[in-house]
Amino acid sequence: MKCDYCGSIPVVIHRKHSGQKLCKDCFIQKMQEKVLKDIRKYKLVEKGDKILLGLSGGKDSVMALDILKNLHERGIVEVMAVTIDEGISGYRAEGVEIATKIAKEMDIKHRIVSFEEYLGVTLDELMKKPQNGACTYCGVFRRWILNKVAREEGATKIATGHNLDDEAQSILMNYLEGNLDNLTRIGVKSQSKDPRFTVKIKPLREVPEREIALYVLARELKVHLAGCPYAGDSFRAEVGQFLKEISLKHPTIMYSTLRGFDRIKPVLKKEFSRKSPLTRCKVCGEPAAANLCKACSFLKERNE
Image (spheres, rainbow, N blue to C red):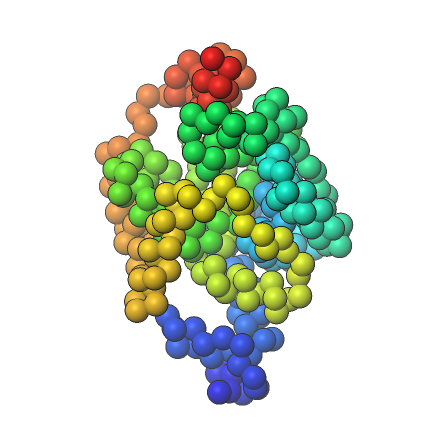
């Protein structure tokens, strides 16, 4: 097979959802163009933005940094990275090391923070006597820390490496659980009416996970490939496996899930989004729907 764009061989990918056949160089170029086009299309950044990227060292966040660096070098935005050490023995240390190395190579300001530093407890310690699943704890605490660090650093946007697979999983999970409030907060750009929440953006939202994996290989970017030891038994993992299996026969299913959701989201937001204004958590001062924010509520449960 020859590349559809330049005629070169070998072809490194045949995209089943679009029929495109691409060589290595054209694939890298098309991926970069796609993400930068989406950033413009959805108005994810403005000139002068300071973007805080959550850099785990995994393939998604490394690709996001590699592409956002383009805007950083052109002086359109300022990019810095933050790596959160959850405190997972035998897993997180390698990711922190890789994230540190790649941020240095790309000349991007980098900061390492931890659950222990901000919360006084590691994820391993929480999971000794868990009241919730590891992914529930991790998601709540990571968002809480990212929002605090963004304010400390004066960031105007928080960027994450969420990809098409992640987003399709989140949509389906919340459909199945009937969690309409959570559905209203899913999207390429999450902006709360409360100014204490920093705007969150997902530049890779329309990029399949397998294409991200191929991109970092093609670019020869070092990434942390190990999977989180807590993720295998999660509901998200089950939903993700289902989507992967159904995508074998229906290659466009994740795209159609995303497009369909985006069409109904305005109705969901109008009918089911939180009407009452957020208050302030009595413990940490962060925005909260009740007396305690979710992070402090989880910590209170553990202490009791």
